Image (cartoon, rainbow, N blue to C red; front, side):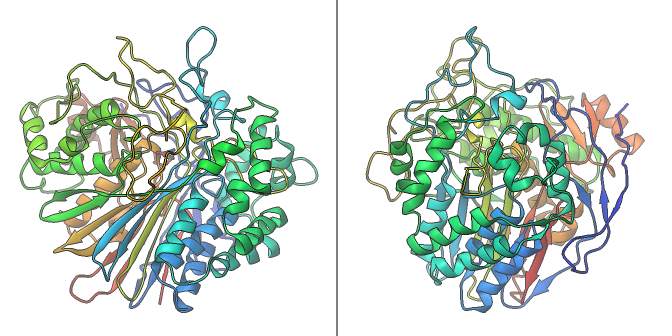
Length: 619
Ligand code: GLU
C-alpha cells in the first residue's frame, strides 16, 4: 500500500501584508529520492512547502508571475514604467535574489526563453554555469574511484561551484532585447536589500533545515543568522547591505566587475579558500564566461508548437519527446485523474527519460542526435515497440537517427531541487521566461564574503562517474578544458569548460504561431513531467492554467510512481499496482509559474503554484 505521509497543518500568516490566504505548511518528510537514484539522505530541501488558494488573476495589458510577490511587483513596476516583458523578467529576477536567495541568484545560472512579438521569433539565452578549466572527471570521485556521497558532501563548499552564468545572461538579454537601463532594473532589488523585508515562511523553513550546513561558512552566518547564532525566523527583518552594494556596483558598471574585477576576485577567493572542499576556479574561468544565445528546440503536440530550451538543458527536448510519444497513443484518456492516464504518462516518461539519460549533455562537448530525438517519426517508431497498456517493463534508450550504437553509457538522473521559474508578458505580446537555479537550496552553502550572494553547487548536476558499468563514457561526465564546438548563435570564440546537463524547461506553447501559454517549474528532473503534465491538462482537458497547476501531481521516475494526495484513491492505486507501479504518496516540489494568453481576447491569465509563495500580478 502507498505510504501516506501525515500532513501536519500549521496556520501561518503570510508576511507581506497581502491578502493571501492562510498557508498550510506541510510536515517534514522522510527521504524522498528512492532506490534507482543515489540515496538522498536529507528531507528534500525544496519540496512543496505550502498549499494555499492562489487567487485567479487576469489582466489586460501585462503580467508577471514569480515565486515571491515582491518579485512579481517589481516586474509589474517595470511594465508600468514603459519596460517590456524582458525588463520585467530581469527586474523580478534580481528581486528573487534578495527575497528567495535559497533558489537562484547571480551566484548561479539559468536559462531565458524570450519570444519577440515583432519578429515572431523565439530566442534562448544559455546562462548555465560552466566547469572551471581545471575540472576533470575525477572531480567528485573518492580515491577508491567511487562517487562522494551527494548530501551534504558533494554539494557543499568550493568544489561543486560552477562559473556563475545568470548575470551574463540577464545583462545580455537586457542589452539585446530590453528597453530600460540595467540600473532601473536593479532598483527594486537594491531597495529591498537595503530596507529589508520580513523573512518568508519558506525561507525560514529552509534556513532551519539547512542550518548545520550553512553554519560552516562565516559569511553565510553573518548574512542569514541571528546574533545568537540561530538562523533567521519567519517574520524577522532581513537586510542585505552587502548584496545591495554588489547590485549598486553592477548598476553602475554592468557585469565587468563580476567577471573581471573585484567581485571576480572575491568569488575566486571564496571558492579556492573554502573551509570545506575548496575548488579550483580561477579568474581566467570567470573572465572567459559568456552566456550564448542558442536556438530553441521545437516540437509539436496536437497541433500546437512547443518551443523549449535546448542543450545543455535536457528540459526542452525531453518535454517534447514525452509529449510526442503521448500523442502517438491517440486521443487522451477520458479523465486526467485515472489509472489509464497515469499509466500512459508513465510509459511515455520511461521512454523519454531513457533517451535523456543516454544522450543529452552539453552539445558543445558531446555529439548526440538532438534532431533525431525531436522527430515525431522517431516518437512513432519508439512507441511501436512498447505494449502501452501492459505492465511497466524495463526500457532501453532508443536509436534516433544519427545515434551510434553502443557508443555512450547511461547514467542515472539525479538533480535535486532548488530553483525558481518566472514569466512575464507585455502589452505588445512579448513573452519572457526564465528557469534559474543555484541547484540545491542555498547552493554550495557559501555566501561570497562581502558580496552577499550564494554560490551555486551546479557542478553536481554532472554525472559523478565518467563511465558506466560497461566502461562506456557517460555523455554528462565532468569535463573542463576548452569548448570543442560552437552550437551557439552568437559567440565566435572559444569558451571555457563543459556545462552540466540540466532539466530546466522554460516552455512556450504556440497556437497558429502565436503564444498561447508560457510555463516552467523548478523540481530537478521532475521539472520535465510537471511541465508536460500542465501542457496536457490545459490542452487536452481544457483546464484553466491555475486549475492545471493546482491539480495534484503525478510523476514517474527512478522506477517509482509519485502521487500527490488526491490521486491516492484505493481503486486507482490498486489498478496502478497491478500494472507494476511502485507507489509513493507525497506532495511534490514544483513551482509552476505561467501565463495563458486567451487566443480570442488576448486576456492574460496567471498561474502560480500553491506549493510555493508566488503570485501573478498584472495590469
Ligand atoms: N539543478 C537542476 C537542473 O538544472 C535544477 C534543480 C531543481 O530544479 O531543483 O536541472
